[in-house]
Image (tube, rainbow over all chains, first blue to last red; front, side):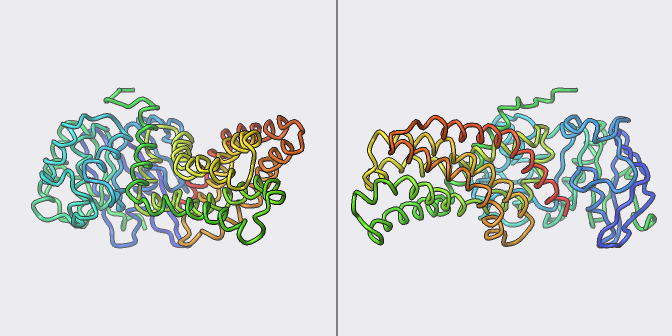
Length: 204
Length: 231
């Protein structure tokens, strides 16, 4: 379970949010919502430890995240704005490397994951020749391989077409049913039952 | 902790090294730039100054060392820059392996790509500079010990300037003064050998600096990278 207690974030002398507390239990989908510049990405980056906590505490399974950082990393999959896709590598090579940081997958599993995100036939294509949406899909293929309990997804639907969004929506729903936890931001209208929404505007 | 097909530490580090090597071989241009620079400096030096053996043989070690140092500086600014810009660094920092070891793995890959080719070319170029085989051995050992130090210290500079758009010159300014001792002991070992003096002292100093930089430099580099990411 992920728990945030009284978080605050200040950037450039601007208070983005303060007194922010929430809790994500197994099976929860949490959408962080807010206007541009309201601190959605900052919050997610805080959870992943890229931004230092300025106030409050983040707990993973009742333990402060900083106290068991390797354990938390093992349970975390983070997909950000920036996809970490290398244009000079093929889709398969990119996926293999990104997944290798978290676990091991056979080639068959990698091919299967790429097929699941609609990249069948593009496995050996250099990513510089793929469209922005296709590159994003290579990154999203990690979701089909990951069994990390906590997913933190920042604007992952950028450049993804409508049917793609619907497909990943279904994946998130399935994930929640299996007891996974997902914290994400998006500007798409999500149709997910039981979706919790965190309005950052309420904490400004 | 559940082992969801988790990788062994060395498996993950090996993947990082292989990834960096593969990327470098896909962009061969950047691989050859420091190498060309190195060869050109050493080939042009005798033409510009003096092709005389009496002059070149004592100058050879210093010349090779300066050229190695400068060509390694050329490749430093790209060490973490691309990974920072495309988000790879974020992925590496939330990987379950210690960030210290990840940095060390990246540095090892960088050394294999940027320093090892220079070292392999050195026997040929040193022969051109009339350096005897006996002294060449000392030069090679000093390079093998010294170049990783340059890479490791340079990594700190590269990490500190990672969030700057053009940190190239700044890295050199930060790092060059710190690498001077390596240059002095490296070139000094060959000079001692030319004078018939024992070289163990020089090489032992290089070894000590190498041990120190392997243990401490990645810590500083990792901390600087984390600071760069939080910007």
